[in-house]
Length: 220
Image (cartoon, rainbow, N blue to C red):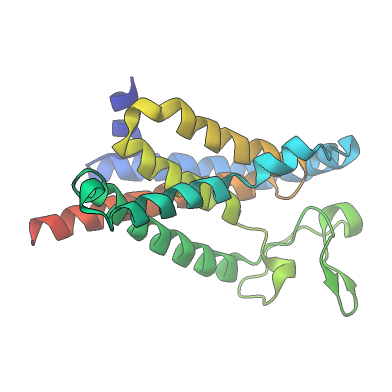
């Protein structure tokens, strides 16, 4: 089951890759056009603020810590032989993840579901406070950084890379993915579409890291 899931998530053929990302794009578009606004209103009405949800929303910190620990462990020869391939892919994953996040946020410029950013002229425009939900490509500032979710992007990118190298821990990596979605969505930090896009870009970052690592190995 674990191997089958990974094969579908990391297809080797161009056709499989196109089908996968076509499906993910479809899910994001459906969410943006038909789900996000109503779900944001529902989450706002619930007024959820439990500390456990805030902890779940910070899941990428756990994975970043594990990634740093793995990379640092390779300083020792004792761990290098065992974790070197994973450490290299984690480094590449982080590079791709942060790069994709920066480019995507600049490119899409989506407003947030809630208003919590203090600006000189008030607060950031949002759906809940101002009935504003829109994409403003290349708009500058935190007020337009909702899409994609950076937390989901980093979580899924690192979790997928860890999953490939430690498939026996699949339940842990899936739990991390579920945790960040639950925390961010319950607290109305992001639209569902932002989170789906972040997850998709996270998968892409991990896939690019795998492809580059494989390419480098063939030339060494």
